[in-house]
Image (cartoon, rainbow, N blue to C red; front, side, top):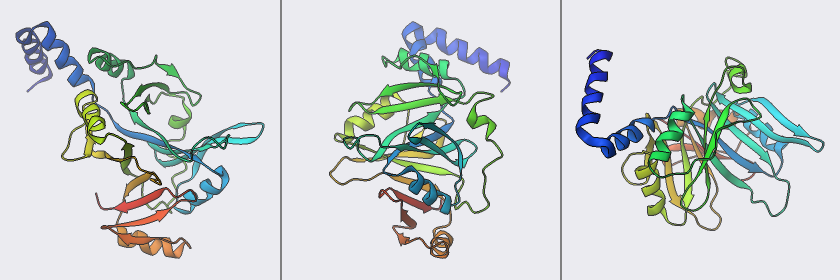
Length: 267
């Protein structure tokens, strides 16, 4: 079908569905994403965590600082995926998972689609790294962040750089999202954000090979990030690099200095 015919078919569908149906169809189509952009972790010691992730082959692409040192280190997994290591400034701030950020090629389109569905995204603004961002809150009040990479941003300028051959993986494929009410959390991600899948492992709309896994929020729970790689090869590499990893559940696992589980498995 040509683009002309596709546009005609879409127009007919909108006319037949009526105004309310047209709004729903727009919202459904407008929720497409390009995948997981980053995960932000609050860490006890940025330098120590950065050194650990460098041992896995992931280098810092850039950082932000204040008079006390590094506030955020941007560790590059690939040209479009990062791990943000955020400094803990107060003892009351919990170590661990802060938020997941999802990438879109059209932030305004995405914001409009969410608004049509009754969500209240924050105003889109340019962040310090030079990309535009907005946030939503999930049913339990936690941030879900969205970004659109822009020309001239620090992320865009880092493309093709900081890509060590020592990387154990260049693809983050899954992130655990924890919630007290996992059914309400699933209903939000499926019904409002357009994720899909069976059980509590849900594919990103438009990028189903990247997923979130909703798990209960319980005492002592730690962040879990999964990357694509041959687990047996990774286990051997971890040993060579002096890290204590293990094979478990069909994957290779290692923990960062704050206890975050870094898992490697086949896609």
